[in-house]
Amino acid sequence: MDVEQLEKKAIEMRKATWEMIYRAKTGHTGSDLSCTDILVALYYKVLNQTPETFKSENRDRYVQSKGHAVEILLNVLADRGYFPKDDLLTYSQFKSPYIGHPNNHIKGIEMNTGSLGHGLALSVGIAKAAKMDDKDYHTYVLMGDGEQAEGSVWEAAMAAGNFKLDNLTAIIDHNGLQITGKTKDVMNSEPLKAKYEAFGWNVIEIDGNDMSQLVDAFDMKSVQNKPTLILADTVKGCGVSFAENKAEWHHKVPTEEQYKEALDVFDKELEERK
Amino acid sequence: MSEEKARKVGEVICEQLVDAGKNDSDIVVLTSDSRGSGSLVPFAKELPKQIVEVGIAEQDLVTISAGLAHSGKRPFAVSPAAFLTMRSIEQVKVDVSYSNTNVKLLGISGGNSYSVLGSTHHSLQDLAITRAIPNLEVYMPCDQYQTIGLFKYLVKSDKPAYIRIGKKALSNCYSNPEEAFVKPGKANVLRNGKDVALVAMGETVPEALKAADLLEKEGIKATVIDLVSLKPLDTELLSKISNEFSDIYTIEEHSIYNGIGSAVAEVVATSGSAKLHILGFPDAPAIAGTQDEVFGYYGLDGAGIAQNVEKSIS
Image 1 (cartoon, rainbow over the protein chains, first blue to last red):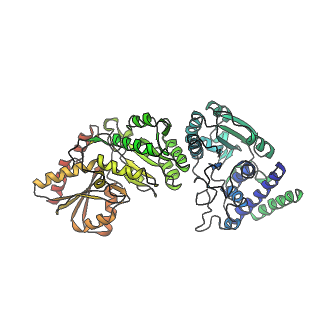
Image 2: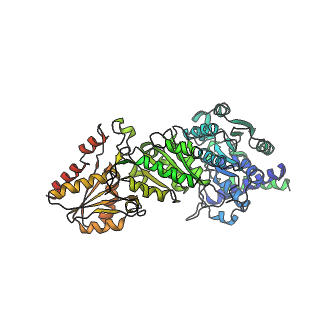
Image 3: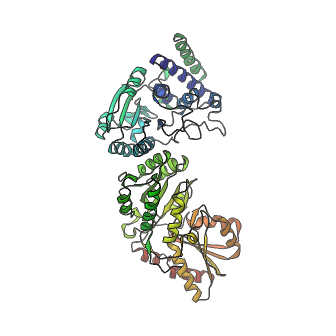
């Protein structure tokens, strides 16, 4: 897919996620919309992985450390054919495997996440195994910026630098908000670029809701012996104007009126891109 | 019982892991600055490419192990039991148990074995929390033969497990690995006696045997059971003895809450008529002393167990 097609796909995925959350009356709406472009870039352009190769030893791995943004991940996986889209009609219902955080009973999910601060260390283990076995798959992990307050993130950041894991790329969905408010007010983790660099990482700063910048960042060749961090500046709630940059939309479900208003916008945008 | 001399369980484990690691390059050991206390220096020397040092970072020790296991490795994560089961317990729950990764968690210097280093280093709640986590086997070998038998199983098994070992050299309760470790969930009856049953595990097994000797001199015949695995638990045998004996004693190097006594009680209370006596560490920080002094103080050595039995059945 080219950038334009990826951008259109991102609108489709935002729309599907918006519909799913409204239907289920639960979801991490703002978080999903914030990282939608990152997931679309990964699953439609970057990852060397398909539903058919999901169990192959040489597939690229994706771990979603910010597990709460599960609605966008499930919609992307369904759209890529990992499981039927209709399965998602059971989202968050009795006995459904499609619940509020990723679990590995679902095809396409590598590891169970949801408790924050685990994904980077899991990815360090996965990338380290590739180094030990001389395999050339690449490991990607998505974290939140609020998540950076977890101490285990920094144990893993240190290990990734120490192990010289140039086969590992972490992305921080740097939207500046968490459930209580601004991340810099809740627990200031800045400057993230300087911190990761001090831990031995190569850091790329981009606009994480700009598809061409995302594609370019993922295209960059790894710096030898260094893990890469893509510090992706994003907007929480991106794509739904009234939800953008509002902490309250972290876990908020739209009203009927809000639902329809945003749906009209998505439909118009898709119409324009026909 | 073999006459061969007492051995440190950690050294026996290292030999087993070196053997297994030579035949299977996916066997890897992860340490948190713990290779010395884990007796794993020979492993590091023999198989340097199969040891991963994570530094003093127990949370990541477990999660990195889970990532390695997810990629086909068979990791043994080695750290003092106190840190592995408390500092890292959420990682155990989520990344090992819930994600179902084949990680073997080896808690070294467990129970009270760090003795005078104090409560920060004691793991007297580890059985309580690990046995409540689904999809996790729990072991505590009592001598070198059980360690060999257990590790021959563990290096092939695809299931996560927690294994707690102590520091001191253990005398032999068995004479060969096959007899000492039959399979997960299979307890061993070490001695048959009609009057009382003593149920032990790990370092309290030899103390239970000593107690049985002392009781015999007083005319009390004791059955001695080595549980071998706390999870899975040999509920069949426990259910049987809960109807055969009027008094059962559990002896554990653990808090009296939620450990071996509690596991046995869950069976006895629902299937038998025996009265259960739970011997273990009280609900307080452990007193300072050598491990032998401490066991003596809390009545967990042979003499203390025997005394407790005599007192309660007389």
